[in-house]
Length: 349
Image (tube, rainbow, N blue to C red; front, side, top):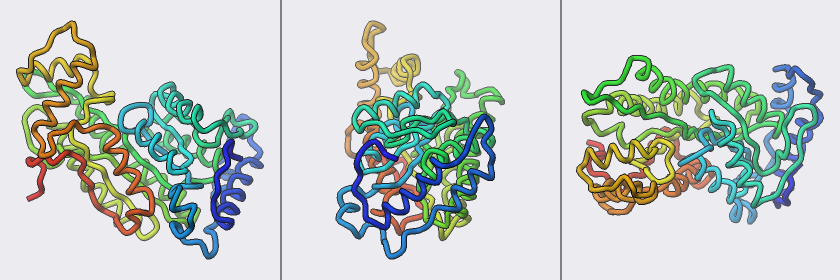
């Protein structure tokens, strides 16, 4: 079903062929029945005698044949994670609230890897190395629709990275409106829970081991003025990782990645926020400077507060998602991996 040749172990290839064939043969029209989706999931079986990571192919492409959903793939850490995972052989579902941005990331992948084929009658095309999907993680029905699309395209899923998040700047007194407080928690905490809760049903139907990685923040451990909603939501997300790891064990591993301030390539740092931060910290700048120049100044300011003195990039974060979603850290669950350059204030006491 793929548009590129992927060499995988025979048993693994049989599993993927069976799974993809089941999806392609599903009769769909204007309405997609949930029963059809569950039927496809139920047909996915664990390959007998194959232990992931043992073949030469797994050494070269540790995610070969695996379907990974990256939520927030339209920009920043999510986009970089999608690009990183596909290099390891994964088939990527680029999901985002902004479908156009998600499609752009999927197209970037397909431009390098080539197209796959579609699923007749579903509107899904090119479901080889990557497809795009729209999702609002604050709405359970939207999450279900995304999973339905994934199952029709690939027959199931193996892993999920949730990189979507929101930071609402406070006013000069450090406050944000009540509705923005609620939105912060809806996206940064509840959204991740809803995704994991819906995914758990699919993982159980499949009977296959899976992995989920949520995004928290170094701010979860650092109390400071002016970002109460964001910081406390990320502290809640830290503990959500631990609770989900218990709830979904032993079938699904759940971990978190906690970035420090990632400015470059982040949708959470538009020009006006960068300028506001430069002014807040007394860093000299000119309104005539390019976005790249302003961003580099702020990124270096944050870097200078760390032990490594180097700006933290989306690519740095993507490496952690890869390790946690692959078998490289297959015995790790319920943990938060911090990628912050050595932020002393975030050291756990």
